[in-house]
Length: 176
Image (cartoon, rainbow, N blue to C red):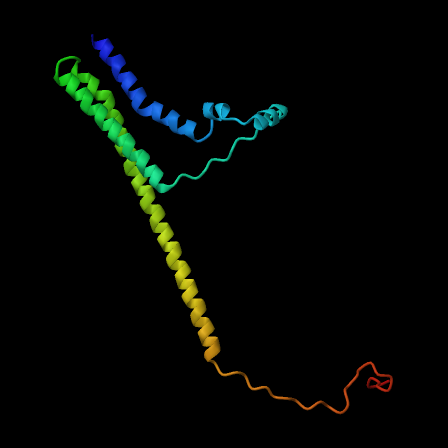
């Protein structure tokens, strides 16, 4: 009886974690859906190519990442509560709660690290923006200071009547 519950827990973890990952990956136009939804002209063009270049990954938005974290946390919490209920009802031994609890604890630890990284990234971005604003203010102040100074007085120098040319023929060095 206890091995059946263990198999059930493994299937539940598989269903909660792996199936959503495969479904999301499939909707990103890779894998099976890409083969199924291929246009006829694309299939002919790709058959002629020896190697196909992989598509570049699209950047994931912050909202998508947070939604994934929430779904994963909710799923793992539901799994822990389910195993606790199964163990409390006497259907399975108490130790079946350990693997889901460890998974949830590891996930929460990773979330804690992710929050620290997000905070550091936001602070770095804020510092970069503050530095850019300070540079812009300094440039504006320098521009205003340049405008505020009096223009230089232009003095015209009289042109000399005779320009000295050291290479002229009538000039000789002393002693020649």
